[in-house]
Length: 185
Image (cartoon, rainbow, N blue to C red):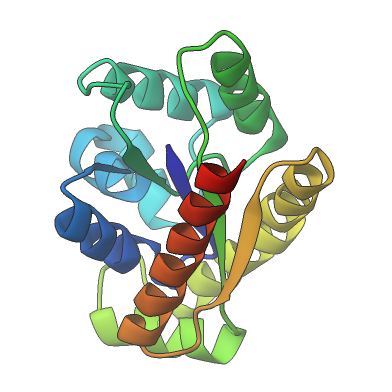
């Protein structure tokens, strides 16, 4: 499993699609799942920038993982975002259900994120919601990245302010280097 983390607008989904298409991997985007499967009042709350609870997110990810072959490499985009979610994922790895290859943390500046999100024009891409998401990332996800890094998890920071092809090339070079190092050991 290769995890793509980063603030909304960093390009996780674009990189996930590129990577999955290039390698034939399954790609699970929690953002896409939420937009497709969450309805009613919860959907309206999401459009206002409110996040789903950890229990809701974990349940949805768990159900989705049951649909793919977990013995094959796959991409997980946008999960985990909180320590509770990371602890659940760690338990799944410890129990042997999942195997972690790498985590890519796509870093992007507020200016670039704002420009990208406003340009894509989705209903939930307002300046207020974008700022809320950036604050959520800084409060919960960024400390989580450091927590995972401190626990010895392979976390690679990629400058996502760059154009998408450059970002993709850096991800591929990192994966290729890691595969080579694993063959040597």
